[in-house]
Length: 185
Length: 155
Image 1 (spheres, helix red, strand yellow):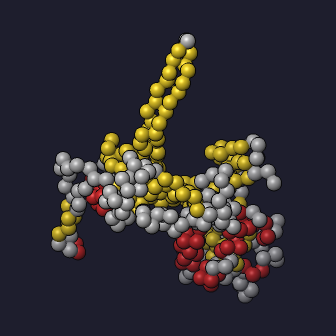
Image 2 (tube, helix red, strand yellow):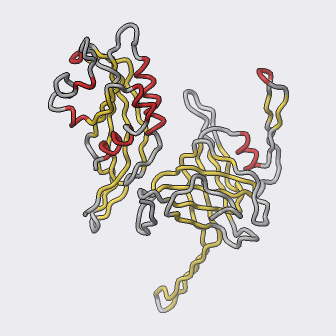
Image 3 (cartoon, chains in turn green, purple):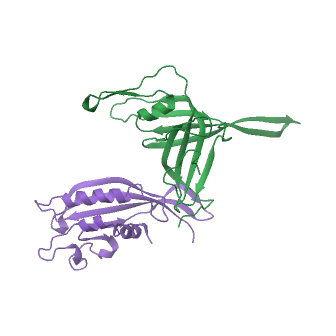
């Protein structure tokens, strides 16, 4: 029976989606990461320690951003287009069709990320990083006998309209597809 | 209910699968000490010639604590349970593996990445293809393996 069991564990990256962030709490069309395997999250902090009388006397720490890394299979043109702003173009059709995606020194756009893990009671956990950019890397290699598996790394900050940098929702009944705001619920 | 019981019950609700698996979708323990045999599982065999019908047999083995999640206080252990599914057919020159392949394709759609109650997920691992079972008059079979990611805890 679906339910939220608050101490329960969640399993596996079930699905992850990306969309262009418009900066006003709305997003472009969501595209699913094909076969995403790992989404790593890292809350970034600033901190300070007070000292006196030969000991630490105070601690302060504050979350200032959220770092993330996505490892997925396939150089999807749509995904790369959203993450980098490099929109692919297409010419001809059928067997003569050619898709072209050109990388220049463009500025990275703001994007949103959403991902889902499952509980064992028909429930789920969804994570939304609403306002982020690929900041630290977009890497892949062409390797003999191996699939091309790109990795993307970025940072997220508070979305100007939504007012948060990351939000988690647990659903008693797992959702078919986590949505971006304003449908994020 | 064990994971294999759940899977057998679930597979038996699928009409297209049951239409091809005319010999039945069985849990291994219910087939008796010697597995598929004409005396104990007559529904799996054709009466006229004693050959196997397309039959699915599910076996759950060796549940393992995978050490990903542990909690001695509640007794919680995350586990992985391999589920082996043998898909048999008589495998004569005419029929070969046609029904077996069709059944395995249906099984994949029904089981891979799915979640039944009280488990995290069923993940596909492998298919061993184009085999013959000497003990069943050289019946053709595939053996498919899935893993059930689940848990145990104190009652």
